[in-house]
Image 1 (cartoon, rainbow over the protein chains, first blue to last red):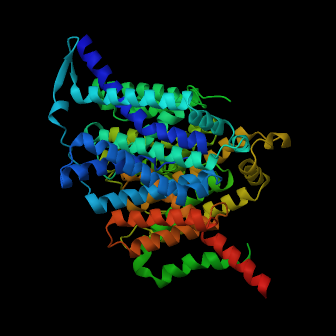
Image 2: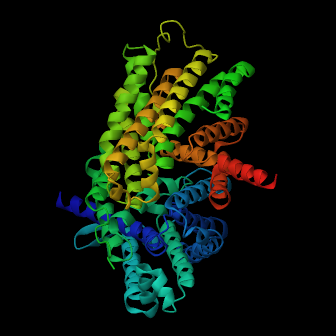
Image 3: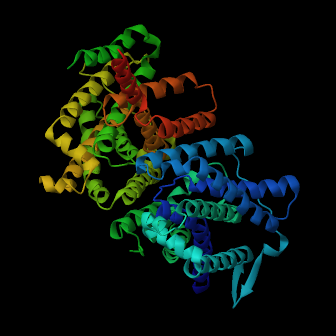
Length: 288
Length: 311
C-alpha cells in the first residue's frame, strides 16, 4: 500500500517535472511579453517530431536527438518571434488568443500532413528501460532520468535568472519593460532570446515526453490546459511558482488516474477552476 | 429598422425560395448565427473572452433533446426550457468568470467548458456519451408543421427564432445597459465612477449570452433530432470565435455574416480532408489578426468610408 503510494507519488513527480519543462517557457512569454500564447504546445510537439524523425529516418540515438530537438525548436521559435509574434505584443489578449489558436490549428494540420494522425513510437536506449531498485522501491529508470534532467535544467535556469546579469535584466524587463529599456537594456533582444529559450525547452520537453505523454497531432490541444494551468496557478516571472504548480498538478493528475480512474478529466478541470478562483494571481505571483 | 437592415433580412427569406435543396444547410447556418450572436454580446460588447461558450450551447441542446426523448416533443416549450436551463448554468458559472482578470477569466471559461464536456461524456447512460443522444422524437411545430427531411420547417423555424433573438439583442445593446457593457469593455476601472457595478452587469450579460446560446443549442437538437458530444467541444467554441471575428465582433450583423461565409465555404470545401480544412481556418485566423481586425464588415465599413471620401 505504502509502496504503491510512493510509486504513484514518484510517477506524479516525473510527470510534473515534464510539465514544468514544457510550461516554463510559457510562463516567460506571459510574464515578460504579456502574451497569451495558446500555441506553446505546438512547439513541444515539434520537438517530439524532430526526435522521432531523427531516430527513425537517420538512426540517430535517442540521447543525441535531445539537444537537436532543443535547438531546432528554439530556432523555429526565434524565427516566428521575429516575424509574427512581435507584431502582437501590444495587441489585445483577444487578438493574441485568436492568433495563437490559428497557429495551433495550422500546426495540427501540418503535423497530420507530414507525419500522419497515428501515435509515434519511441525506442528508448537499453539503459533507460526497465526499473531500478532505489531504497527498496522499484522506480522506472526512464522516469528517474527525466527527473534528473529536469532538476539539472531547473538549477541552470535558476542560476541564469537569479545570479547572472542577463537574469537581472530579464527580471527588470518583467517588472517594467519601459523603465528597463530606459536604463539601456535591449528589451527587444531579451524578448527574442527568452522566447527562443522557452520554445527550445518546450521542444526538449516534447521530445523527452513522447514516452510519457505520447505524440500525435492533437498534442497541442490535448495538453494545452495543463500548460496554461501550470502558468496560471504558478504565477509568472519566477521559476519556483511554475515548478511547484507543475509538481502539484502532476501528482494530483497521476494519483487521480490511478485511484479514481472513472473520474477521468474531472479532477484536473475541477482543480483548475477551484485554484483559479482561490488564487486569481497565481500561487506565488511575483509582485514588483 | 433602416432600409439596409430590411434588405439584409430579406436575403435569408429569398434563399428559402431560391435554394430549396440547401434548406438543411441553411437552417444550420441560421442556428449557428444565433449562437454567434450570443457570443457577440459576451465578447464583442462586454469584452469577456470566452473559450468555453459551447458549454451553454451544449446544455441547451441536451436539455431540449432529453425533454423530447422522454416524451415532451412540443418544440416551442422545449426551446423555452433549453434557454432557461442554459441561462441557469450561465448565471451560476458567471460568478466564477467575473472574478479575476483577463488571463484568469480566459482559463476559467476554458475550464468550465471542459468540465461540461467531461460531464456529458461520463454521464453516458443519460446523454449517450460519445455515441450522442438519439431517439429525439419531435412533435409538430405549433401542432401543424411536421419536421421534414428537406428542412422546410426547420429553416423557417430557425429563421423566426434567429430573428426574434436578434431583435432582443439589438434592443439590448442599444439600451443604456448595452452602452454600459461597451464602457466596461473599453475601461472597466473607470466604470464604477459612473455608478455602474461592473460585476452585476457582466453577470447579466453572461447569463443572457448563455440563454441565447442555449436557445441555439435547443434549436439544433430539435431540427436535427440528435445531440452529439461535439456540441460541447472546445473545437466548437474555437470555431465560433473564428466565425465571429471573421464577420466582425461587436456589431451583431458581423456574427451573422461571418457565420454564413464560414459555413458556406466549409460546405463548398466539404470534399477536403477535415484536417486540411483546419489548416485554412488557422491561416484565416492569423490573417485576420494581422491584417483585417474588423473582419468582413470592418473592411466593408473602411471601403465605404474611402468611397465616400473620394466622391
